Image (cartoon, rainbow, N blue to C red; front, side, top):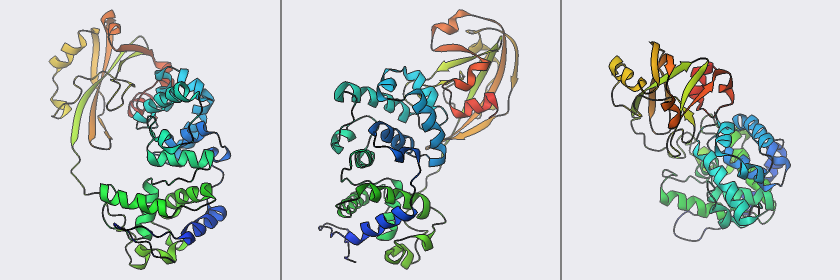
Length: 364
């Protein structure tokens, strides 16, 4: 094996790395995933966006339902964003859905509905970074381009003993150089899929199956008993906790919802009205007078009671929610003049609601 040196010098290619990986993928890799049976860039793009930070098993049913509703990039670009968000509801990381809609509109407007082959042009579209652009172009058009998602970073860090946290600019630059140097001259699709498969099914974050890895004999982490240490983990920070009070306002078998701002947590989705967007103290400190004051704009209260609080973890903080169930005797039209709407209880399962809110209201 030719040694690949990470540093300021040029990287020396190692064709045997790609050859080994391609052979393994052809024999042991995944071949029956829904998006593997096509060269349609639209379907490949959709799968790549859904798979960002989401497991394959979770994505598959969403992918099928999404394509049933939006079978082409034209149907997606023409759809209301609320409809797109509703079909994404529960998949999480909702910025992906908003960028998906914007990207579809760009591709239709700028490229007549055909995704460009050029990786840089793809990477310039909303929600598509360099690695995703390379994957789309490789799988749809056979382009020789390097990917570097989280799974691939883990494989490279272990096999080549890369030190340092991969999220830093210096280490990531080194990994991109390595990814480019290792590219094969042919079978780019099998190679790219092989990297994804190896990181997702064998070289996993925990409980790596080193005995089943085709790269075991060349893996520096395996040789030095550092598989659990590489890649170097991001330094831990204390996770802040935030609190809010949400109102489950009911009237004649309908529930009041508020449209959230386009950006931020649950951006663009419908959610329950909040006494405060975020409060610094425990939600139990909210007084009945504060609740009454907010509810006066909605109408006359018939009854009110606390529901069990719940917590939901985001990537950068933990949110604790105290739901308050409110039954209205009479409602004012004022609520409909802002970002509020009433939804019948039997329509909630199809609404664009955050997963924790849907679980609170529907119980599943």
